[in-house]
Amino acid sequence: MRHEHYFKANGTGTVMRDVFAFESPLGVLGKLVDALILRRYLQKFLEARCAVIKQYAESDSWRDILNVPAS
Image 1 (tube, rainbow, N blue to C red):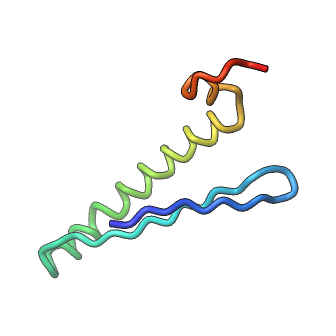
Image 2: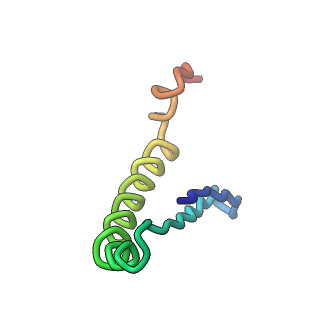
């Protein structure tokens, strides 16, 4: 499993790109589980996680997590 984040500034903010690669063990059986179940589950999981990150990043809520007082 490999999970990377890439950040790039654009004209109005920052774009985050999530790169996630995985391969289950057990050869053909693992590939079958990946195709039928795991790929879809992980995609939905990462989309939901990114939505929460976006919500925190685009509001002052991130301050609560990092204990940064409001300015």
